[in-house]
Image (cartoon, rainbow, N blue to C red):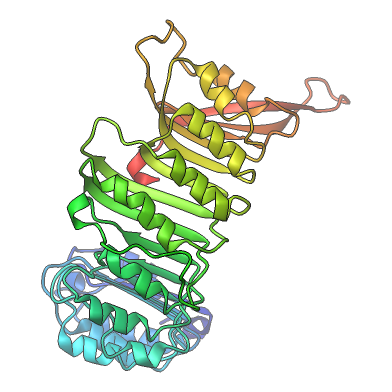
Length: 414
């Protein structure tokens, strides 16, 4: 509040209702971008009042994030809503452990003109924009709903059908069989992040027929599918379900995140690769399927059928490193390769030790190679050209290729 004239430059604010004590000097430093309220109420009773005054001066505020990890709720958020409704707010993110509450929700749904909304609440009834979606239909383009479990499919479909301008959608807990119907109402959707049931018994009964598509079915560019523990039958239905929601040419990134598979071997069927390539062969650049397995000849098929492939993440089995190198020989545009390798018992001694020398050779296998990031096993190798300073003054620097090694990121974080 010492320099209120700076408030007009603030575009983004993060507020937290966490109870942990925070040093007052830290709050002063972050008063416009991150303030702890309840933890300071005991010693600084006017912390919320001062923050609201500062927030009121942020007349050009575009986004606000509210984070509250406490297990109980109060009406602090209500006072912030009363202030931000006077600003040209476009983005709102709310992440709480406790229930938001009906009083807060009744005020939230009066906000209009928002383009991005993220609602994650661990407790209380799921909030899926009931009573709010009809007023957001003309502006909302990005939406995250962190709890859809237990919401009747008819309600979820009804809410999302009122948001035809959506381009980015993330749903947690939505029934997989409702996704094709939801997509039929979202012609502009380009990115979908959703879940799939892990059991064959809970699979959707009716897959989308790609030959009979609703006229407004979207062309997805990015698809992220998350699943918990899968039984051995779950993946068999998964591949057909994925094909059913990306029937139109344009998919650029496929990302499958399965936390655990209750099976000795879960391979991606060749027919899935071929069907996907028939529609998206010219567009797909990112193929990440975590620890789902591809045979080496299927990796080779993938690299041929998707000539623009830039990122490949999967599991495979191999007897030696040379076989892996051969499998990606046709991937001319590959930039990132991450493989979870199960080495065959017949592997020769030393044949499974992927080193920086192997990484360098693979990255520079051709003059126009773009491959610069490789993880096979627990080590991540990154390569780049650098200009090495000359030892003697007056000489020109030399361009050399350097390999940097680091621990590979866990598959569940990718």
